[in-house]
Structure formats: structure tokens, C-alpha cells
Amino acid sequence: MTTSKIKSYLTPQWLLTFAILFLAVITGISSAGFFENKGAAILTLLSVIYVFIQGAKRYSWKSIIIFLCLAFVFGNLYENMSIATGFPFGNYYYTSSLGPKLIYTPIFINVAYFQMAYITWNLSSALLGSYSNKLKGTLIFIQPIIASFLMILWDIVIDPWSSTISHAWRWENGGAYFGVPFSNYLGWFLCVFSIFFSFAIYTYYFQKDEITDIVKTGNYWVQLIIIYNSWLVLIIIRALNTSILQKVFDLGGQYWLTKQLYEVGALFGLCSMVPLSLLCLFNFQKTK
Image (cartoon, rainbow, N blue to C red; front, side, top):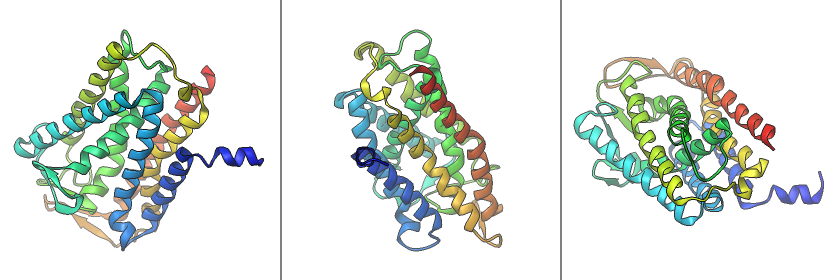
């Protein structure tokens, strides 16, 4: 590998990507201690930094801050409404592990919405072959739908771990999917579609019909895919190093084998997140 090639991997974006992947591995290996408790939070914050850097380059600082505001407002609105009424996600509550709350919802949750929403928004554009910053026509509806499903796939992989095992939040009546109710994923679709559709409308009115240089680089897409799948890497490692004897209980009184919970999440991610990520890369290479 040439010196110039090595230097190309020492950019802030690549260093953040490598750090996120490394942290996902360490968190997956750790069964106790600092990384067990804080690894996922640090991983999320590093992703936020990455998204700010790349989002500003693709859309502008103003636009990425608007994206953040949309994620924060809709996320907090739907989360607080559901905790208070049960709609749209179901009946649950957040424990104190995620820090300060705005009403009932930790501020950290809205930050997590922002970083993964930006990643899945971009991946949806690659799946559709839509690289312009300005959405027009049916793409104003179609891209938010595709992006919403990509984000739900991520949540299907991590939600049982975060709720049933880590107890960052608790479902009051448990649920069929390892303590998580079906209503959660319907609520997720409504919530993230609201974010994406609002941003799609924003791009139509306030973005230029142009493909920025960053979108034309393979590094951009590879980095997004690595960050998207880093959470899956974490779950796969947990599936491999968790004892079959461990079990957890949800608040509905159902117990689950922890290893099997991780294994199902890993299997689902391998059969959904990974092939869709590869399709994103294929579509990008085809349009170069």
C-alpha cells in the first residue's frame, strides 16, 4: 500500500469510522465494566460527530442542523406521547441509564435518532439511485418510505438488547419479539417517516438540484455502510460469546434465553442489513 493510499485512510471521517467499528467490537466482547455500560453511548456520539462532518459537506451546515431539529422534534414528540398514552409505540418507560430527560424522554434518544436517520436516509438514496440533494416527484414519498424501513431494520436488531437485556427502557407488558411489542415497529415507521418526509419537502424547496462531490466518492458510501452495520457486528459478537445458560425476564413475566436473543438479532441483521448494504454499493458502482 502506497503512502498516499495510507494517508487517504487517515482523514477524520475514516478515523471516526474505524473508531466506531473498533468500539462496536470492544463493546460486543465486554460482558462487564466501562464498555458494557457506556460503549453503545460513545459509539452513538462518535456517529453524531461523523454525521455532522459529512452532512455539512453534502447538504450544508444549515441543512444538517435542520435535519437534527426534525429528528429531535418528531422523536421527542412521538416518544413522549407514547409514554403518556401508549400511542404510537406502546406502553413503556425509560430508566435513568440514558441520562437527562426532556419530559419523559432522554435527550440522548433524540441524538441517536439523528445519527442513524442521516445514515439510513443516505443509504435509501443509493438504493433508489437518487443522488441529487433536491428530491422531486414520487421520490418525495418513496425515499422516506425506504429510509424508514432501513431504520426499522436497525431497530429490530438492537431493541431487544437495549430494552430486555440492558434495560435502557422497559416495555410494561413485554412483547412477542423478545420482550418488544409489534406496535413498537409500527410506531417507529410513523416517527421516522415523519422525519424523512419533512426533510424531503425541505430539500424540494431549499436544496439545489445538484449532486455534491462527496456523494460521488466510494469512501462516503463505504463509511456509511460500516457505521450502519457496526451495531450488527456488536450483536453478532454478543451472540458468539454469551452463555446459553443466561436468561432475562421482560415485564410481562416471560423469560428469554439471552444467547438466543442475540442470535436472532444477528441472523435477522445478516439477512437484511447486510444484503441491502451490498446493494447500495452495487448501485453506486453501477452509476459511477
